[in-house]
Length: 294
Image (cartoon, rainbow, N blue to C red; front, side, top):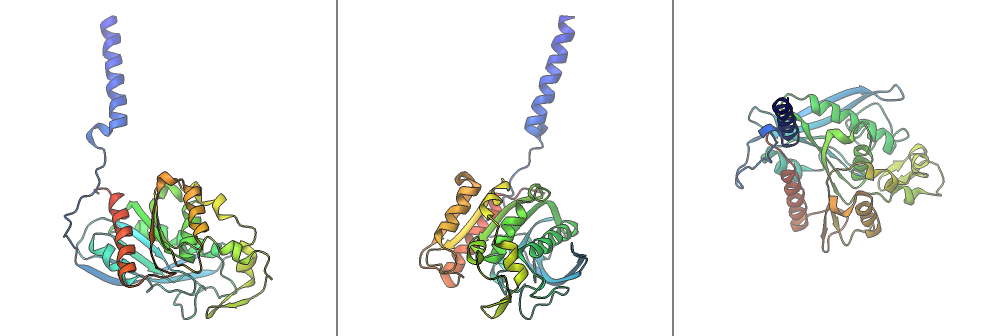
């Protein structure tokens, strides 16, 4: 009887050890040679879905990916205010060469000259942008060359704001491996709080009354910390649009231990030259530190 009990206990201990150690199947971080680069290809991509108000939305975008067949991690890139799917050429090229499928798209109704259809400037808000990004996540997970367990989100400015809000959704957060943001515009609610809820010209485009009304009661810092994986933030200390207090607020909301923050000296709201090289390198290093062998 004692012998049988000993065997059962040993089997249970082995089972628990396998459960926690993965029985030798624990995932290993991908470790590409430092000088390895994949040949890459570009392809236009259109995603169609119906939004929460019954609109037929057609998101126009582009995929930049390794040319070789296989399963790769993916990065979904979200542009800023009045931006376009073409706003991150350096990032897409750098990430794809290191084995990431990159998907960029025009948020519908969120820019002049955009190629997505189904909404106007009067209709779009950060929450319709969230719907677009959520649709993009679902689409990218289904791509034949994507490892759906390794999807990262990246956004700049207003796109960073929307990225942070979307990643915090309960039904999204566990699908995302990590998020990276340039100067996330978490100041947007404060900028519009108490302002007239009316269509307002801004920086060559228009902010609609719906947009303004949708953010005036929003506290993003009470929301974004619901995403509990690692976060990369890159910000320039001469940013005239996103003050340091909003970056510090994001770090506090996520927890210092989970945020990789890079402050680039003398860089503003938008990176170029050496600052852009630094920003791309920081995000790529973050991605590679969180990417596993397929």
